[in-house]
Image (cartoon, rainbow, N blue to C red):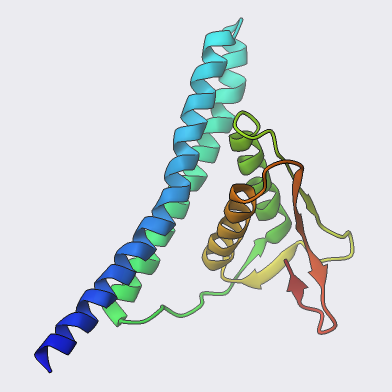
Length: 171
Protein backbone atom coordinates (compact mmCIF):
# COMPACT_ATOMS: atom_id res chain seq x y z
CA UNK A 1 0.00 0.00 0.00
CA UNK A 2 2.83 2.38 0.88
CA UNK A 3 4.72 1.42 -2.30
CA UNK A 4 1.64 2.33 -4.39
CA UNK A 5 1.32 5.67 -2.61
CA UNK A 6 5.00 6.44 -3.21
CA UNK A 7 4.62 5.40 -6.85
CA UNK A 8 1.60 7.72 -7.24
CA UNK A 9 3.49 10.60 -5.63
CA UNK A 10 6.49 9.98 -7.88
CA UNK A 11 4.26 9.96 -10.96
CA UNK A 12 2.58 13.17 -9.79
CA UNK A 13 5.97 14.85 -9.27
CA UNK A 14 7.20 13.66 -12.67
CA UNK A 15 4.12 15.15 -14.35
CA UNK A 16 4.60 18.42 -12.48
CA UNK A 17 8.27 18.63 -13.51
CA UNK A 18 7.28 17.86 -17.09
CA UNK A 19 4.68 20.65 -16.99
CA UNK A 20 7.20 23.11 -15.57
CA UNK A 21 9.80 22.23 -18.19
CA UNK A 22 7.30 22.47 -21.02
CA UNK A 23 5.89 25.82 -19.89
CA UNK A 24 9.29 27.42 -19.27
CA UNK A 25 11.17 26.20 -22.33
CA UNK A 26 9.31 28.22 -24.99
CA UNK A 27 9.63 31.64 -23.33
CA UNK A 28 13.27 30.99 -22.44
CA UNK A 29 14.01 30.07 -26.05
CA UNK A 30 12.15 33.22 -27.10
CA UNK A 31 14.15 35.50 -24.83
CA UNK A 32 17.39 33.83 -25.91
CA UNK A 33 16.41 34.27 -29.55
CA UNK A 34 15.57 37.94 -29.08
CA UNK A 35 18.95 38.54 -27.47
CA UNK A 36 20.75 36.73 -30.32
CA UNK A 37 18.85 38.70 -32.99
CA UNK A 38 19.49 41.93 -31.09
CA UNK A 39 23.22 41.17 -30.89
CA UNK A 40 23.36 40.40 -34.63
CA UNK A 41 21.57 43.67 -35.43
CA UNK A 42 23.88 45.62 -33.13
CA UNK A 43 26.90 44.29 -35.03
CA UNK A 44 25.42 45.38 -38.37
CA UNK A 45 23.98 48.74 -37.23
CA UNK A 46 25.27 51.92 -38.71
CA UNK A 47 23.89 54.44 -36.21
CA UNK A 48 22.85 54.75 -32.61
CA UNK A 49 19.29 55.60 -33.66
CA UNK A 50 19.05 52.24 -35.49
CA UNK A 51 20.09 50.44 -32.31
CA UNK A 52 17.60 52.39 -30.20
CA UNK A 53 14.72 51.80 -32.62
CA UNK A 54 14.89 48.02 -32.54
CA UNK A 55 16.22 47.69 -28.98
CA UNK A 56 12.88 48.93 -27.61
CA UNK A 57 11.01 46.37 -29.72
CA UNK A 58 13.16 43.45 -28.58
CA UNK A 59 13.11 44.56 -24.95
CA UNK A 60 9.30 44.82 -25.02
CA UNK A 61 9.00 41.38 -26.57
CA UNK A 62 11.42 39.90 -24.05
CA UNK A 63 9.38 41.44 -21.22
CA UNK A 64 6.24 39.94 -22.72
CA UNK A 65 7.81 36.47 -22.54
CA UNK A 66 9.14 37.08 -19.04
CA UNK A 67 5.58 37.98 -17.99
CA UNK A 68 4.37 34.79 -19.69
CA UNK A 69 6.88 32.81 -17.60
CA UNK A 70 5.74 34.55 -14.42
CA UNK A 71 2.11 33.74 -15.27
CA UNK A 72 3.07 30.12 -15.94
CA UNK A 73 4.88 30.00 -12.59
CA UNK A 74 1.72 31.24 -10.89
CA UNK A 75 -0.36 28.55 -12.59
CA UNK A 76 2.14 25.91 -11.45
CA UNK A 77 2.16 27.29 -7.90
CA UNK A 78 -1.66 27.25 -7.86
CA UNK A 79 -1.56 23.67 -9.10
CA UNK A 80 0.82 22.56 -6.36
CA UNK A 81 -1.06 24.47 -3.66
CA UNK A 82 -4.52 23.22 -4.57
CA UNK A 83 -3.58 19.86 -6.09
CA UNK A 84 -5.52 20.69 -9.24
CA UNK A 85 -5.71 23.30 -11.93
CA UNK A 86 -6.63 26.76 -10.76
CA UNK A 87 -9.86 28.36 -11.85
CA UNK A 88 -10.16 30.17 -15.15
CA UNK A 89 -9.70 33.91 -14.66
CA UNK A 90 -11.76 35.50 -17.40
CA UNK A 91 -10.82 39.04 -18.33
CA UNK A 92 -11.17 41.07 -21.50
CA UNK A 93 -8.15 41.12 -23.79
CA UNK A 94 -7.31 41.63 -27.46
CA UNK A 95 -7.12 38.17 -29.03
CA UNK A 96 -6.13 39.49 -32.46
CA UNK A 97 -3.18 41.37 -30.94
CA UNK A 98 -2.13 38.27 -28.96
CA UNK A 99 -2.20 36.12 -32.10
CA UNK A 100 -0.31 38.76 -34.11
CA UNK A 101 2.40 39.02 -31.43
CA UNK A 102 2.73 35.25 -31.17
CA UNK A 103 3.02 34.84 -34.95
CA UNK A 104 5.55 37.70 -35.17
CA UNK A 105 7.64 36.12 -32.44
CA UNK A 106 7.75 32.71 -34.11
CA UNK A 107 8.34 34.33 -37.49
CA UNK A 108 11.35 36.25 -36.16
CA UNK A 109 12.67 33.20 -34.35
CA UNK A 110 12.38 30.87 -37.34
CA UNK A 111 13.31 32.99 -40.34
CA UNK A 112 16.99 32.37 -39.59
CA UNK A 113 16.54 28.64 -38.82
CA UNK A 114 13.95 27.13 -41.16
CA UNK A 115 12.78 30.00 -43.33
CA UNK A 116 9.13 29.28 -42.55
CA UNK A 117 6.51 31.96 -43.08
CA UNK A 118 4.20 32.34 -40.09
CA UNK A 119 0.94 34.17 -40.59
CA UNK A 120 -2.56 34.46 -39.22
CA UNK A 121 -6.02 34.83 -40.69
CA UNK A 122 -8.41 36.84 -38.50
CA UNK A 123 -11.73 37.59 -40.22
CA UNK A 124 -12.83 41.21 -40.01
CA UNK A 125 -16.23 40.26 -38.56
CA UNK A 126 -14.68 38.39 -35.62
CA UNK A 127 -14.44 40.39 -32.39
CA UNK A 128 -10.92 41.41 -31.44
CA UNK A 129 -11.69 41.88 -27.76
CA UNK A 130 -12.89 38.71 -26.03
CA UNK A 131 -13.47 37.66 -22.45
CA UNK A 132 -11.51 34.59 -21.45
CA UNK A 133 -8.35 33.64 -19.56
CA UNK A 134 -5.49 35.32 -21.45
CA UNK A 135 -2.83 33.30 -19.62
CA UNK A 136 -4.37 30.00 -20.65
CA UNK A 137 -5.12 31.21 -24.19
CA UNK A 138 -1.50 32.37 -24.61
CA UNK A 139 -0.22 29.01 -23.31
CA UNK A 140 -2.42 27.10 -25.76
CA UNK A 141 -1.62 29.41 -28.67
CA UNK A 142 2.13 29.28 -27.99
CA UNK A 143 2.10 25.49 -27.74
CA UNK A 144 0.05 25.11 -30.94
CA UNK A 145 2.27 27.41 -32.99
CA UNK A 146 5.44 25.97 -31.48
CA UNK A 147 4.39 22.44 -32.44
CA UNK A 148 3.29 23.55 -35.91
CA UNK A 149 6.70 25.15 -36.48
CA UNK A 150 8.52 22.15 -35.05
CA UNK A 151 6.78 19.70 -37.41
CA UNK A 152 6.64 21.87 -40.55
CA UNK A 153 9.69 21.54 -42.78
CA UNK A 154 8.89 24.22 -45.36
CA UNK A 155 6.09 26.52 -46.41
CA UNK A 156 3.76 28.50 -44.17
CA UNK A 157 2.23 28.00 -40.76
CA UNK A 158 -1.09 29.85 -40.55
CA UNK A 159 -3.16 30.44 -37.43
CA UNK A 160 -6.79 30.62 -38.57
CA UNK A 161 -9.52 32.18 -36.47
CA UNK A 162 -13.14 31.36 -37.21
CA UNK A 163 -16.53 31.84 -35.58
CA UNK A 164 -18.48 28.61 -35.10
CA UNK A 165 -22.27 28.21 -35.23
CA UNK A 166 -22.53 29.13 -31.55
CA UNK A 167 -20.78 32.47 -32.14
CA UNK A 168 -17.71 31.18 -30.33
CA UNK A 169 -14.21 31.90 -31.61
CA UNK A 170 -12.30 28.83 -32.82
CA UNK A 171 -8.53 29.01 -33.39
